[in-house]
Length: 185
Image 1 (cartoon, helix red, strand yellow):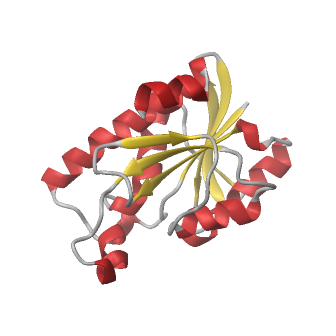
Image 2 (cartoon, rainbow, N blue to C red):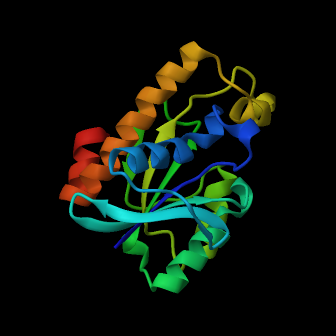
């Protein structure tokens, strides 16, 4: 069973922001595979289903970004999952808008949600799909950049990234992380 986690912020005002790319990918997977995200438990919203013949849990932590790891830890403890069963999807300022990066392991960089995830898991060896949001014009404007609303033109570019990320998750499930890295990086 895979736990597929999309990082984001739960409040409606954060929809259509750069920081909710993980939520957007989980929503696309849920729609394509007809998985209802209507369960509320583990400090998150989740649904169970099948993707490419594999059982999955799709999770959107509802703790706000900086505490995302708490929700993930509750799910892995309840279902007795290993780090190898986890795929985390999140926005990344170090990846160009509309692009993605697939990784087997790594640090959190400047991403506070990923800092929480790593703090709450036994180690940092879990699959991740980083969705590019690019850099702000001014470094001191980072918070406004990641949680600020985006216009329709930029949203279209970001949507291409979330579509690629959805396809990368499917590739990981079907053919493994190495194939996904070869195909999407």
